Every structure is written in structure tokens, then in C-alpha cells.
Length: 229
Image 1 (cartoon, one colour):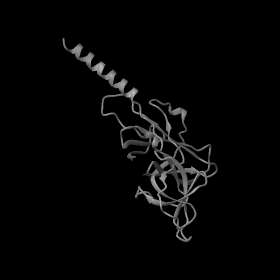
Image 2 (spheres, rainbow, N blue to C red):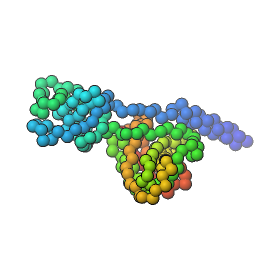
Image 3 (spheres, rainbow, N blue to C red):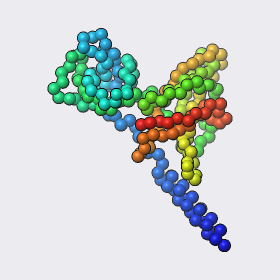
């Protein structure tokens, strides 16, 4: 006679878990840095190296950088925060000497939120292949190959969050969707598309594990990755 009571307790616990999941949906964070700009390589000018041109046109000369792992490259778009240290003059003489306190590459495209449920028919599903995936900072770089050459192809990356269930809850799944825009040409094109992963960031966490799929099921590609932030 204890079975109905036990099932009732399990049901209540399950409903509570679902409610908690729904009320604690992922907290979407954007970059923690304050400004955006682009890196320029001034090597060759007297005393110059890499400088940063902000979106307002102001030029910064990085003297101190808190993130020693960040790679400076000419033309790289970035987001950053900085302070202006006292008593440090410029040798390059093209901008303001600064202390970089926060820096990250600025990805070109944000990922889309597909929610908890989705209809694959709402998204393009043209064929392509994934050959390489790399995560640098908040950016994911996906090398793709497809047949075409006559029109521009578009890629969309979206996230489907795991449904409520008994822990451990599976990781979110990212789906990379391809729109060939009716291209019937047969040249094999390879390119790298990049997306901003910061939508996956969650409060009180420093990493998110996610799965990557090529289009929607059935998918010939499947990989699992850790996004550190």
C-alpha cells in the first residue's frame, strides 16, 4: 500500500525539479569588457607595436595586459576594458598608453536561441561537412565545406536547451544550419564561419559543456566541447 504514496512523492519531486529548471533558465551574459575596437600592427614605426583603435576612433597603446594568453593579430576585432596608468609616457606617440584589464576577440555573429523546443522545418537544412572546430575565447570557429560557387551561402548557429528531466541533465546542443540560397554550382568551397558563444554563459559558472551537430537529426557530425569563460 506504500506504492501510491511513493509514486506521488516522486511525481511531486519531478514537478518541483521542472519548476526549478524553468525558473532558473540560463542567464545570458554578454561580454564583461566595456568597449570594442580593432587591433592594428604598427611594427616598423619608431617604438611602436600593436595598437588598438576604438570604435570612436581613439587609439590606445597597450603597455600592460592582464591576460597573457591573448594573441594580438592585425585586423582582429576585440572587446576590451582598460585603465590609464599614471606617469607612463608614449614612445610610439600615436595614442594613449593603457593597462588592458579585460580583452577578448569580438566574434562576428551571435548564436540564436532556439529555446527548449524547435521545428527543424523552420530552418535551412542544405548539405555541408564540418572538418574542424576550434574555440578561442568567446568565439567558436567551424571550418565547413560545401558544393557551390555561384551564390553566397549563409550559416546559422542556434542552441536548443535540454528539456526538464532527472539529473544529470544533458548538455545544450548547438545546431549549425546551412542555407545554400539555391546555389546549383558544384565547385567545392571551404570556409571558416565564426560565432559568439557568450549566450551559453551561465551565472556562477566558469564553463559550459555543449554538443555540436550539423543541421538537425539525422546528422553525420557530432562533437562535444567545453567552453571556458
